[in-house]
Amino acid sequence: MKLDEREYSPELQRKLAETVTRSKSFVSAAELARIWSGVAISSRQLGRVVEALGAELVAKRDAEVEAFTHHRREAEGRDPHHELAVVFVDGGRVQIRDETWGVEPEAGEKKGNFWREDKVARIQTMTSVCHREDPCPEPPRCFLDAAKLESLSAPDSRETTEVAGESAGSPAVPPAAEPGERWTPEPLVRTCVATMRSIEDFRWMVQAEAKRRHFFSAQKRAFVADGAAYNWTTLHAKHFADFVPILDFLHVAGYLHAAAKALGSVTLGCQWIRDVWQGRAATVAGELARRLSEAAGESDVPKDHPLRPVRDAAHYLSTHADKVDYPRYRREGLPCTSSLIESQIKEFHARVKGTEKFWNTENAESMLQLIAWTLRDDGPTLRDHLESRPGHPFRRRTTQAEPKTTAA
Image 1 (cartoon, rainbow, N blue to C red):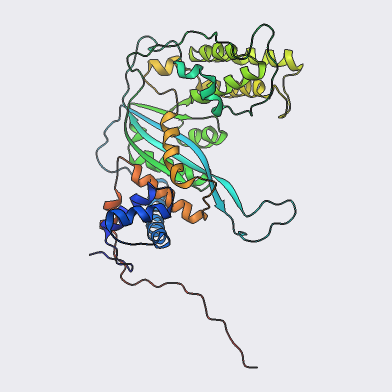
Image 2: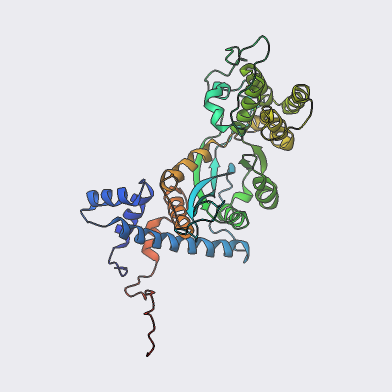
């Protein structure tokens, strides 16, 4: 029956794990499990069950990464020759307890918890239709809405002066694309990679998953991410160099809106976004540098300067000049944004992120792996894993050693 020492069947463990990954906490998951199963299980016991299962999946993933990357294992099954294979990469924050939790910090030190980055990749196949002409020459209206994109702005919001003759709330904006026939690639099958480990470990995990799914022989290949340095210098350059590099347009729009706000003009941001959308990123970068020099008297400013967002936007465009040819991407049927990975990050963080949630590193890794398995559309499922793993009716547990006593 493949029962372990807790005498939970594989099917019950699967349902418990999926309930946990879709709940806000172990407490709410235990209550939901009691409702649908009629079995009373404490939140602490539930945590032990699913964290042990997650640890098994972490070990299974690590073994597969080792096989694909270091033992050069080839992907199994027939190569489907995907129409379009895309690797999306992003990251977030999870609150981790460190080893000094509960110990009073020294003067100047933070208390024993901190936010650490979790790294997530979406390995996605998509449809792709080529066009002779740009199917969307005008930017969609959503990119011209400063309020919606303000949260994506890398620079902090600061008080700014207004440009003479124009208010910061001026409604005059360039024309935007009207809703019409869908031109963006449509998602087909996704799998996920997620970890709390370093980029050195993460990059091999992403490559192994892409190789398992025959991504390197796809007809079209793309790599989409924001401007984080390791996305391009480590992941793309070392593992996906022949994938078309695409800088997420949402982040570009956020930088440009922030720069326009620093200069006191909404209209400027909309004009710049339209220019970059239509392939004139170099012109916009030059204009940003010129305006910064004229307003601040220098081409670089400190981080606390009111015009720092202008400098950041110019630097962002110039640094990633080879990844912003958006008219070409649209003609070739490639994605221009990382919206799919952004929404997936929210699926992960709905479970693991919160100011009231504190994780040990190992438990956070286990939970991320469980979530990745519940979100995948391809490959073995949790049911497959639980049905094929050996049972453990007896398991030696580590107990605290009894204190030694000596004769007086």
